[in-house]
Each structure stands twice: as C-alpha cells, then as structure tokens.
Amino acid sequence: MTTTRFETEVRLPALSRRSYTITIQPGLLRKLPEHLHERVRAGRVFIVTDSNVRRLYGRHLHHILLLHDIQSVLIDFPAGEASKNAGVAGLIYTALLEAGVRRDSMIVALGGGVVGDLAGFVAATVLRGIPFVQIPTTLLAQVDSSVGGKVGIDHPPGKNLVGAFHQPLGVYIDPAVLATLPGPEFRNGLAEIVKIAVALDLPFFKILEQKLGTLDRKDVMALSTIVARAVGLKSAVVGADEREAGLRKSLNLGHTIGHALEAGSEYSLSHGSAVSIGMAVEAEFSVRLGLSKPADARRIISVLTSCRLPVRVPRGINARTFYAAMAADKKSAAGEPRFVLPAGVGRCAIGVRVPSALIAEVTGIRL
Ligand code: ADP
Ligand code: ZN
Image 1: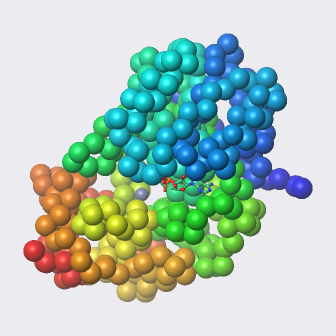
Image 2: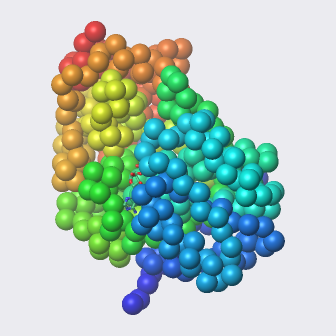
C-alpha cells in the first residue's frame, strides 16, 4: 500500500524549543514505536485513554510498544465529557504516582478531545509537568483540540475553566482510526473543518464544497488530505498567536453562538451541531451587517447541510442560559459579546458587535 505522509510543523516563535511536528499518515498507529523510540529514553511510558478507545486501540498500542521493547502502563477512565474533571484527574495522578512516574516519563494521550484535554492537563501538572504526545482518535480532536496546546478540565460552573498551555512533544494522527468512529462524532469534526475553511481559506472551502457531501469515513487518502489541510491552517494560526491575542480568535467562528446554544440546551446539543448552527446564524448576522452577501451565507449553509449538520436553532433553548453564556464568554468585552463573523467566505472579521435585537431576531431566542 502506498502511504502518503503529511507533516506540519507547529512553530511557536516565543520559545522555539517548544515547536513540534504533527504527522498525519494512514496506518501511523502501527508505526508509533519507530517514532517514540527516540523520545523514550530511560523513562516509562504511560498510555492514558478512555474505556472505548482502550478496547479499540489502547491494548493494541500497549502490545506493539512491548514488541519494540517499550514498556508502557495503560491507564483508562470512563469515556465521555463527564470524566473531564478534577476527580478523574486525581485518580490518574494516583495511578501514575503508584506506578512510579518520573520527570522523564512520558504520557501518551490516546483518544478524542476529552482524553487529550484531560491527559494533557495531567501531563502539565503532575510533578510540575512531564512530556506528552497526542494520538487523537476522533476527527474533532485530529483537526481541532490536538493542535494548539490548550489542555484542561471542566469545573462548575462551566467547561474548560481550569487548565494550562502545555505543548506536546509531537502529535501523531492516523486517519485510519476514524473508520470505527460513530457517525455523529464524525460530523462533529466536519463542523470544525468547515469552520477553518470559512474563516481562513476560500480554496479549501471550494474543495469541501466538492468533497464533503460524499466523503467516506473509510477513504483514508481523501481524509488524510482534508485533515492535513485543516491541521496546516490551524497550526499556522496557533504558531502566529499561541495565546489568542488576535489571529487565533478567528477560530472562534461559530462558537459564540455555538457555546451559548450548547449551554442553553443543557448540553443536549453536541459541540459540532452547536457550532454548525452557530456558523449559520453568524453568517446571517454577517449578511445583515453588510459584511457578506446573501450568496456567501447560502454557500456556507449548503456545505454544512451536505454534511448532514443542523443549521437551524432548535426549539426549547433556555433563553436565560443562552444569553448568560454569551455574556460570560471568555471573548466578551465588559459583558458584551464580541463576534467573529465570516466576511464573505475564507475570511473573517474579528471583534464585531452584534445588536441584541438582531441576535434575538435571527436566533428566535427571546428573554
Ligand atoms: P471529542 O473528541 O468529540 O471531544 P470524546 O473524546 O468524548 O470527544 O470522544 C467521543 C467518543 O468517541 C467517546 O465515546 C470516545 O470513546 C469515542 N472514540 C474516540 N475515538 C474513537 C474511534 N477512533 N473509534 C470509535 N470511537 C472513538
Ligand atoms: Zn470547537
């Protein structure tokens, strides 16, 4: 089998020793020992994963590492966002410390965004920080959460409220693992891919217009190309603006409305669905504010629909929670939300104020 390999360098100029490579290659999971060998010197390897991914890929990875004389300890926790908290982080600290974790040990975060955030957070904090690598296994994690070094846990009253910036030593993406991903999880990732194209890259958006509607999850070559392009764009932005002072904000497209919808639905809407609806709503804001043409908004909505992602605000959103979440958004200025809106397709405007009457009119959510 011919395998194409894509590599993207994430350059963090502030501290160049923290730059790292993201490797994207079908079948990469089997080749990991080659990649990890040079990184694992004296220390032990700890594979941190969730209960599903342990069964699908974790035990296998543990085994192939062993075949290459790399000893590892497999630690897992129950799959799902509900595990992304200080209690489960505490259990992982205990497991690591009991197994003799040292400063030269390495954590391998194997799983979706929950594993990456939680295992990355543990890696950032145990023994004041130890090295880690990411092996993202959901499309969402491959194109979004594994790029950028944001790690963290949820804590009342919200998501990702406790965390750190901790850059991995490397990110290893095997698009072949997406074959086992449930459809809704796959679509969550598509929403972030569309977001990246709408915010940053018209030619990429045109490719998505042609390909996404018929994309097969088992077509590893097509997937690899799309994932590589999305990752390349995101890493360029993160490299230019690690701490989200400016450009990185463009990746919040669809998210101001999206996060508020997630909260207002009591998290019954998935992140990808909420971001998809958020993008459709924000595209309409953009048209109303004269930043885009109606045809631009129609194109965005049509790509989302071709992925079978929702584009309309569902009934039953709690208006109070929706508006409170928007005001509390980390990106808001003095309690007033600031939006990233598409400016046509492939470009965006950052820090836009949207009148509350327009928000109420377009979303249909009224206090
Ligand atoms: P996300 O990546 O969307 O932030 P999670 O980390 O919770 O979210 O992953 C979503 C679900 O998909 C979890 O139940 C996880 O166990 C499961 N999962 C992760 N990777 C795979 C895979 N490659 N195949 C099947 N299921 C997977
Ligand atoms: Zn997102």
